[in-house]
Length: 220
Image 1 (cartoon, rainbow, N blue to C red):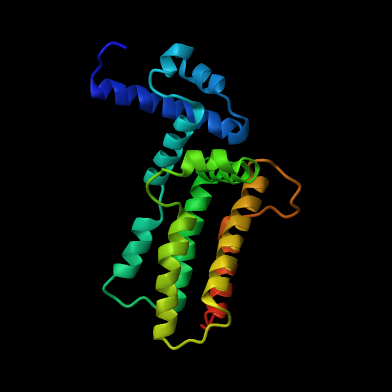
Image 2 (image 1 turned 60 degrees about the vertical axis):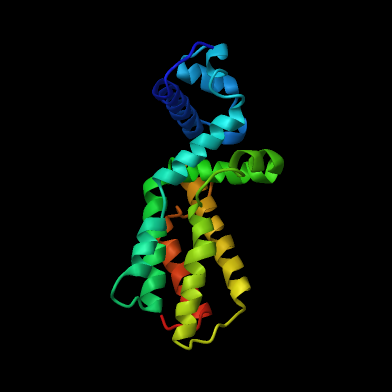
């Protein structure tokens, strides 16, 4: 391979990532092949392997880019670091409003790909781990579970609210509910599944926020 500048190398890799991302929007991730990506890039088969060893390595960079470009972390951190005191009930609603904003904005692209990865994890857990295992940064659900929720529990405790269930059970419920909202909204919007009434993220997240407040002993 002839020597090329780092800038050229990174630009080529980004072009491949962008092409793979476009393919992910059209096809379930589980069904994508390396040939799909090669055809989307316009590169030769040998050309693409100069930059990536396999499809999963490309998909890993696609997911890394998604996490970097679309995250709830900064907005939620601003809530927690604001000078004015963040009330527990108000804080819960604001966090889930942020989640609703992100899901509504990216329902047909990033959320669709995240859903496809969930399906892949069910059917091919080792391959899914290979794709996402080494990616830096957290998904929205990961950040919600490891950072936002513990902070909310602390706020609830500070207000001497009495939890109506164990914290770990509440956390597990929120994780399952978030995944369910994502799944049903994706199926409704992207795959036109027969869901009855069309699912929308915002009212579902609003109901989840009210449920969390109740489980944490707050007043809605």
